[in-house]
Image (cartoon, rainbow, N blue to C red; front, side, top):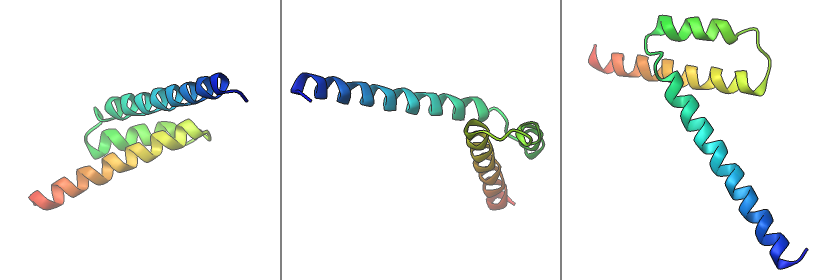
Length: 77
């Protein structure tokens, strides 16, 4: 592999990683609108039957949001 091809490959990989981070950031922002346990659990129920990497990612983010909700309310209680 010559230097030009290597440089192009590195730039492409960095761009793909940057795009993936931005997509994840956007997904987290979108899912942050579901704030209460009822809202989060409703959305979890809707992705429960899905078996894909994307659904697993959504479940993970929602579980993080649910944990954050309970952590905030445990401190204030």
